[in-house]
Length: 176
Image (cartoon, rainbow, N blue to C red; front, top):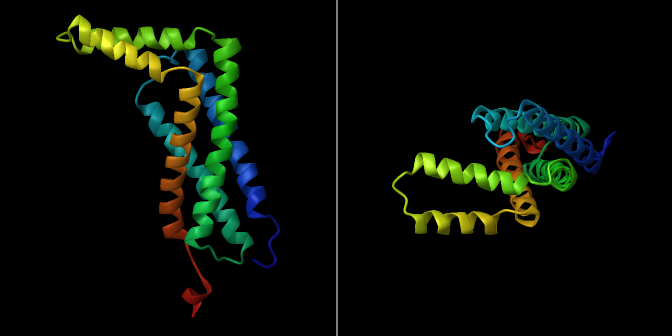
């Protein structure tokens, strides 16, 4: 770790903020297009690609700052740090969004999901619909959404960091 110009913590912070703000911009664009409640599946693919690119660039910077060496542990730590910071930034945005910009977000989302259930599962009984709606209501809200957002961010950050770390890892023993 000699001659390091930028510390891994600084890279985690910078790239985590970058990823968090990219995620916010992406969601604002969806909101502006009216696709916030029913996004196309391709939105998830684009989101994963953006996340992957930002985490990989962060790992590449750590490797450069470490004289071309990167351990799997450093890759995982850095990638998870980036994912955690971006997740926290995004949760803060979600709080503002659901409290001030779109206060009826969770109610509208529940209505959209209920309508989709009626369309996609016409064989469901009223009792099944009620039970599903009750479960959906329990799982919605800012607390659960924040928890799922952070868990999802860390999960994908781990997977991306693991794959990129395995590809990019290089130790002094590899040079011998």
